Image 1 (tube, rainbow, N blue to C red):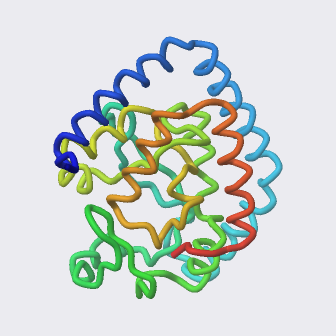
Image 2 (image 1 turned 180 degrees about the horizontal axis):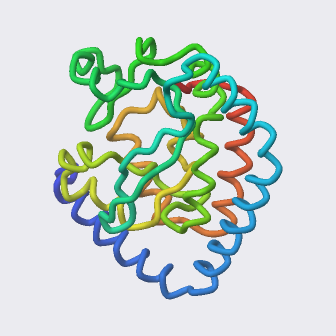
Length: 227
């Protein structure tokens, strides 16, 4: 007889908490992960600075009155809020128009995704398709409120809808990339995203992080599943 989902979730949460405690006891992993984050983010910002300038110029040319960098409140480890940075890919009043588009949501659960979102600018379509809009998050990595690899940092309005089971994805520092991003991204629903994040939390290691980073480069070059 199959075990009820509630019992499966309860046992899974206990297992996650136990394994996460074991990982936290391995200080070497956390120290090395942070060192890789700092070095990787710094090198990335230096090498990509010419691209940053080009993208900033294109955003300004299309919408001179709008800001180049979009700042948004996200929820990080243990529910702590922080400002995430992205290249602006939408019109300046995009947040004000969100309420009118909620019925067009193309994903499940507490997230909002819309393939043909009318708020996205022309340059915005390109930088979202190639994930260039995410690159300013390297600043978040240097600041320590994000890692190169980890669960996607959710919006506060998304967390309000979380169950206790869903909140387990907030056990670790969120990342620029993770299992969700390399497993279908926009084609993956909310529940599956949560399962992928919890799987990462259970099994995270330097080898797992490196594999995810390498797979992310492949997915970016494919420019697939992002909108």
